[in-house]
Length: 98
Image (cartoon, rainbow, N blue to C red):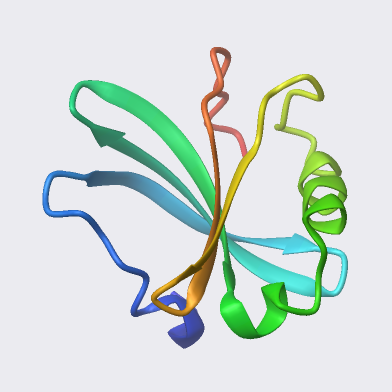
């Protein structure tokens, strides 16, 4: 795991099911699949330092370049969460072949 993502905050009731570093243009982000309260969802997490250089539109465009992201999925951007920017979403057809 990249040291830049070792302090990503985690809610006590959230269980990380998998995580991988993904390349988005010139940026690295952490992709997580997690469960909370019986729901499974995903996040792509940027360090605050990198995310502050990017508008929400640019972040969304970068994420939509990933082949496993459904082009119609709703992305929810949450900035400055203890040094990170989270982009949360759910996918009905999650494919473990990332």
